[in-house]
Length: 345
Ligand code: NAP
Ligand code: F7E
Image 1 (tube, protein in one colour):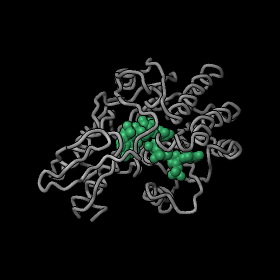
Image 2: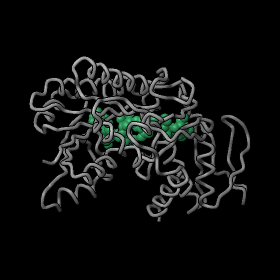
Image 3: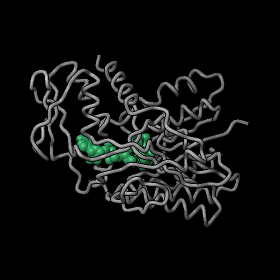
Image 4: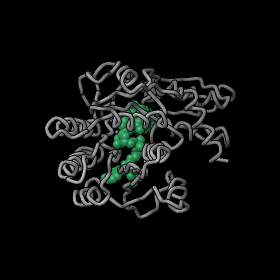
């Protein structure tokens, strides 16, 4: 019997990589996507063609839904009767969460509760549950952050995700549900959303490389992040659900870099060296070859409250899930640039 997985957030970056991984493991995958006025399936189009439209035996199905809609969620779980649920759906942008705090709390916090309640009431089988928790929950706690680090979020996103994380633990302990949270640090890929910093930097660098008239407008250059590759990270979501007992795990590379270092790496890859001038919101980056301004700090991208430094320690995942990252930051940057070069050809 093929296993059935239900994935929320299927149209997002991780939705694509997780669906690809589960389909390669011979799962039947059901994805929940939101209705929008424009079609927003570009990441999963290829998978849908291969595993649904052109497949003799179909194994990839899409359903309309929203984690803010209890009835929709409970009906889909009853109908699909999955073995495993992966909850990736979220308003996942930290800065946007300051502008839409109530919606973020509803989708990222209560959305988790809605799924857990449906699992609790589901009588046909015991469903395993994965929750997409985040290093943003650590907020101002000092690195390296581990499973036992104090949670001190600094954004509505971090707070909403902490509710989702904790309610997952409560349902696991109170009702015996096989429920785990992966506390994932930043992970990127060519399919990263365009308003996250790595993708924004790569897109701008390639535009400058091609046309020489692009300036990267950027926020906090000094923030430090632990960046891994989404393809490496989604595997853990599955590994956690294959363990004998449900537990939470930190997933990280254990290495960290500033936003400025990420910019330098990206431009250098394209043969462009940057000279920095000025300070704080007056800082600019110049192309060493021609003194053109190619990076400029813009206060618009500063957050009301910033998590300055995130660096994980994924020792527990290494020991118990036998996992370690396989793609380095340099390989990630190279892959993102090559993808963008093809797109902007
Ligand atoms: P993403 O690219 O922003 O994808 C988020 C997905 O959630 C999209 O498919 C989005 O649909 C969907 N969604 C948003 N609100 C929804 C709602 N109310 N109901 C149903 N679906 C909804 O994020 P990602 O990078 O793949 O991240 C996946 C999950 O991991 C998220 O929960 C994120 O918070 C968490 N996480 C990410 C990272 C990271 O570095 N990437 C690190 C830690 C945790 P649309 O396409 O319609 O917008
Ligand atoms: O910012 C700084 C920004 O938006 C990274 C999400 O996947 O990872 C992600 O959240 C850093 C921050 O990711 C710009 O201030 C500077 O310090 O790429 P980001 P994030 O906020 O770390 C966590 C783990 C998640 O769970 C989230 O879902 O870069 N930064 N200038 C900028 N960031 C953005 N977006 N845009 C700028 O112009």
